Image 1: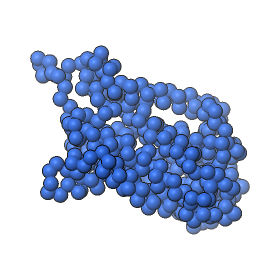
Image 2 (image 1 turned 180 degrees about the horizontal axis):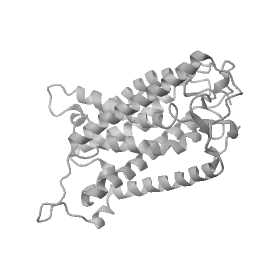
Image 3 (image 1 turned 45 degrees about the horizontal axis):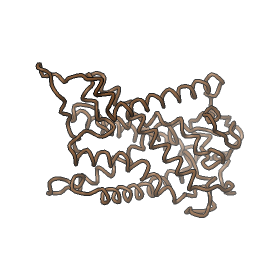
Image 4 (image 1 turned 30 degrees about the horizontal axis):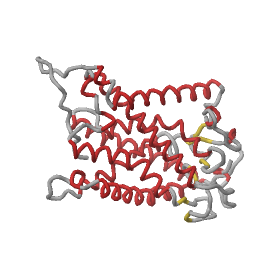
Length: 333
């Protein structure tokens, strides 16, 4: 990842940045940070009620069958996801050290775990996604989200690693990979493509890269059966239709648009204008110790908007059908 633009705040006579809370509260960062705090407060209430009512427990494991091979695959995928999350964290940590402060993508990586609360929304109204009840899981907290309803809510699982949790953190790859590819295309030309390309070109390229990434990773992930399956989606616009590992083609558009475009376009605009990433504009007015905290809050706000957009588009485009007859019992509700 190339270095993002540096801040150039006004300086006092001793060379230290001027602190102006009034200017900060009129900046984009103040709005996004307030949104992030609101999301944290909301999910704190949801999870608190869920825990107090005894929801923090795994679903019973005696009412399904799973082979030894499937158990090994489930654990292997959970380990692989954990290792991948650590590798991504190291990459972003090194980039932040080079930058001298947390990068935008590092902050987004930190913000994504705070979107896990929304995972049950994928089954709002109807069962669309079933999760592996053998994997590390807990009973769903969906019933504690205001307005949420779904069939057999008491039997729905939330897988902690390969479907939510660390799996959500890896959504940052939908931004990291396109940016890494664009930076590789720089070659001997200066400035790079992230600066030379216009809005239409960078948008089309980002969606195309995200669609290829989604077409490779998600079906493979589903086929392992280690995390989740799109067992309840409509079968009209799917590949492997009628099988438990079917894959909705809508995802090829939804996830690039919701998870790739917002951060990529923000970084693209930042590099073209020489200004800070939009949601972080205003941090130069803060005390140094406060910048990272407000940056995390702003990233939480953006991450939640991105994930909610993805889920809303999925519910709009997926459709619904009964679970395929070959759905393994450990993936059934």
